[in-house]
Image (tube, helix red, strand yellow):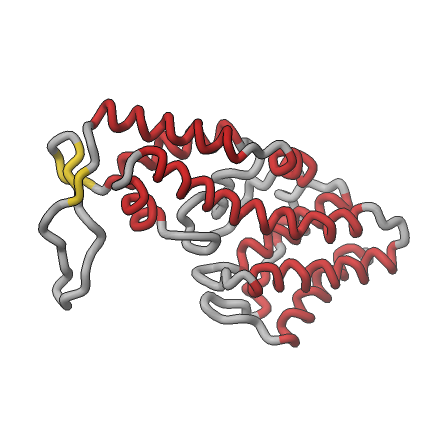
Length: 239
């Protein structure tokens, strides 16, 4: 999924630096507690469901007397709370909890966590946010070096190395799931924006796309593919 609404790196990094895990856990727990007060307790259905091939499906629960997926009931209020707490990056395209790249599945992981109550669900959300923040924190020093390098040729070399490092952060953390490389594209766009002062949503920065270098889901790119993509990013800073 293309992300056309990235904020500047400085405001994204400001959100990361001011992150308070305890405050997040308390705020999300309040959201889930409010849902329990409104809809009643969460109870897993006694009858497990299966598809036509005998595969087990996500648990159906009774919440407020109606069968529904807990995650769908919780999605809107949870999203609103997280956007209010992290306005510069959360919910921007692929950056949201339960995206299956940085953590668990929203439709499976959250319902399982919520069975034990709001506090358990809040801890699950915090772990998801921390996984995304970890990538941003690991990318930050690479972005900083490129941003503050005044020599054009040296900056291009740093950008090449930073791009490889951003890819490796995702790979080393086993974050090679559906469209994992899109996060790398966002990181590179933040780096280019920080280095040039241009908007991350305007050409040529907006047009960064590692998929055109044969990056794909569930597969680590070869050294050649990584280097080719990194070369293309460095070239943008040599102009």
